[in-house]
Length: 490
Ligand code: NAD
Image (cartoon, rainbow, N blue to C red; front, side, top):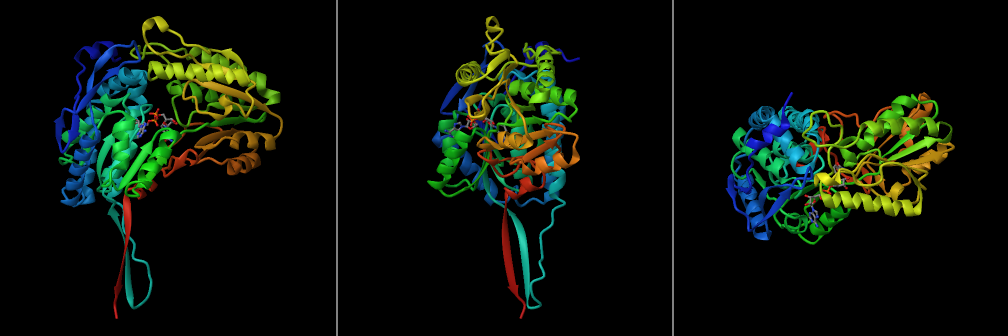
């Protein structure tokens, strides 16, 4: 069993900007504060507009001279597989970085996040040399070729909630397709990204192919979004910032923008479902990762006839998922990402309750004396569907419960938010399962489960949850241009 606390004594990480294969001091720097206890983990360089420009120019040079795009897919695959192997070898260090900078239990980061990162690098590495182009049958007098070409320089801006998984979902397909990348991690989680990039260099990514610029979103992220020489901008984060990337693109070079944004997922529970499984999964789907998941099941829509049974089980699970130090081995939930975020969660709960609802458990910060940022599992019952807690993403361990009477009403409630990322229906009626899942307006729909997935299936949303898909072969489409060449054979 790993002693995570003792590993912290030898924990070191790069602090610069990675540009053209070299670590640079940025024009400025910022403190990284651990939400575990408020300790300062170190100072990390911050990139201003000029630094971002330097990184984009390095990525452009690396793209144009073919040092990466000119390699065969099989050669790029070898580098990605080596990178995955190094992540495996440094799995504990990378998992520890998650715990220290964003408060996720280290054991969980080691088991879940790092598994996802390693598998993503492997999967896209393995996929890319199996892709073939197209020769449609057009006419006896012509040859038409449809070829995929790497799109160029990619800006990747990612959030902190699954810092390396989200980065890997962008980096692996972008790099596999032959693009070069400038990665902008969230300012709350720069350390894990720097460690990942260091391993990427060691794995054999040529200089300039992967560049990393940390810094505040409105400075560093904006500079990347507005840069006239970025071809593709792939973003995971809030809907509010997603809108900005569309504006940056419109007012610069019309770079392609792909947005994976927020969500307001629902577990819809019918009386004929396996109620115990539904309730336990619904609880886990909002308390896991302290509810800091775009796809979190932040709404429980439950038929009135089984409301009490289901809610009782949810409360039982909540009692077992109280937060604690993420470095403890058996802690079920860590801190939330920052003290500001904890306060934001709490103010949304307070404001939400003014409109409707009754708190059944949780509802205010805990472990305040630790100096850390902890918020407990919180269940709020009788939330009216048009109020804050049913409509807005809290991004914390806060479950809004609403009852329904009919299937029609359940569907209207489930679809009745501006988001469309992911939701689940719980029923053992086959017809209803098909009917209801078809009518749910979400990019991902689960039946009698939640958060299930695989790298072979796409992930992403509709409506204000954005567009474009991570994971699966479809993710590669974001990073290729299709070129048609028509040859006259007469
Ligand atoms: P955020 O939008 O605040 O930040 C995400 C990234 O954008 C960070 O790197 C940040 O520095 C940068 N950024 C912030 N302001 C910016 C600006 N003005 N210009 C350019 N860049 C800017 O989101 P967050 O708080 O880091 O993450 C939480 C959000 O991410 C939630 O809304 C969550 O639903 C969403 N998310 C979505 C998915 C998905 O796949 N759909 C996955 C994880 C998280």
